[in-house]
Length: 388
Ligand SMILES: *Cc1c(COP(=O)(O)O)cnc(C)c1O
Image 1 (cartoon, helix red, strand yellow):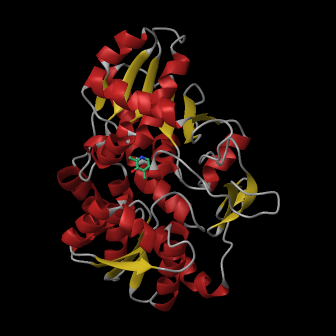
Image 2 (cartoon, protein in one colour):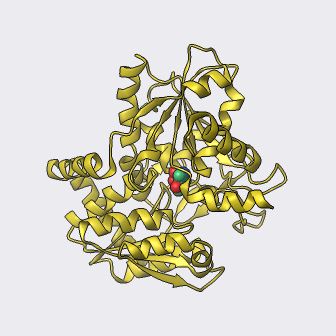
């Protein structure tokens, strides 16, 4: 495979001004990723700060209720800050620190990646600048305050539609100017090479743990792993250690939006090949190649592209991608809360909603849902929604 490519997808579609920064990052990451000292520090933070390993939990009540295969949850929702995103920000912030870079740049849409980045920067004593669209700042008051409480600065972006893609452009502009002192932390397995690989590797901690836990707890590999896919980092992380284990079925659940006439965030199911944010991948675009405006009940799945490795896994049929609509996700959100006493994030609720479609599987099968995050962050919007 060509460097930085997964089949036809990935690569570096970037302005010349960025190639120095990305080449340098690739070189340094290759040098450091197997370094003993780096890995000791990483393991230490994962254990005592993030709270890893996250448990593999048998959802007994839900299994009884669905009357199908055995359902297990990989509890990434129990991580510090409440989701899988911390796995990647911890890894990249530590990488930056070991590279002697004391200033971290990030972009955020709904604010979750901003919070996870500000958190680890506080712990490691790194300066943290979070670019955020002015419109998103208005919509995400609580996360804005969280980021500021953690000591990071937010830079409002007023250009374009004043949302995530504009924040991303500004963050990149900052990085190009300050590459010698700064590291740019991308929040998913998206963007130009080497980011999709770096972010996957840090998230693969959940898949590695799951492999060991399933062998201990049910003496076999899972028959199926289900994860939601926005940019695709929690799914890629939990899938990756199982790619060669062909008996393990991998299911990525995308957001379908309101109904089948809607443009949701299902870049694999509904999209076509194009270039977005520096990589060739599957994207939601019009016939003339303009990026479509996406729509989903969950902010974390509301993205018109997907990590290039997912596009590849879809093409070679190693993983299967499906979509779930807003109402189905909302129903799962309430159902899992009431049956298991676990309030899932709306993103995760998409993966959970898929369980309804597989209840005919044999009762001896073990199905694992990657619980990417908890629902605290979504309670306010669900509450407002229900009143309508
Ligand atoms: C951000 C987020 C996602 C989507 O991001 P991926 O990169 O696709 O994993 C999913 N679940 C939760 C809880 C999130 O915060």
